[in-house]
Image (tube, rainbow, N blue to C red; front, side, top):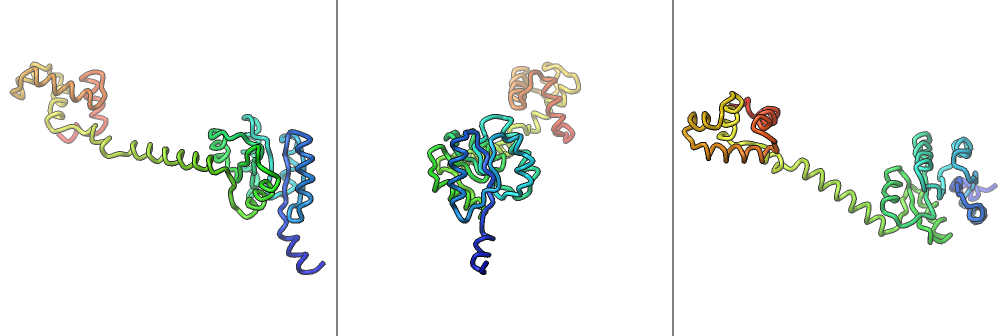
Length: 231
């Protein structure tokens, strides 16, 4: 065997094919075996019975359409957890953003739709071996939108303005301290030289701001933030 043949052999991609439909499985296996750059190291129908064989095959890429239910998803997750460097390429999939996102979070490297051609499947296998991902542009956009939405939700959660809505003024804290001391609105009004109407308005505003159900609930919520200790 010459040097060129050695190089070609070293560049071959080892693939394990896992498919439910026998006709599809046999047809795809024959197609892949005709490719000099692809070495089909195993073909099976059942994911569970094939698990040990698949792992021992030390394949680089698992080409499978088995991603319809939780059991199969768990199988693929176990496979990715147990084998370092293995790449899972899904084919025959529906154009479903939710299923696609689930597969991405699982750790797959490719997602091919039902109308993918044989040439596209072979190209995806090659891409997987190179460490590249393959997915439909429309679903790729779904992933971008999902990540963008998650980032926005995170920003809103940590938005300083959100915290500011829970930060009370010195006057509001003064009122709450008096509430904490057990004083009624009438007593607070007398202490601060305000009308009872003004005191009630202040308290309603505070309760709305901290989302409290009562005056004493407002005291507990604000005390938990540490603001009352500043008085």
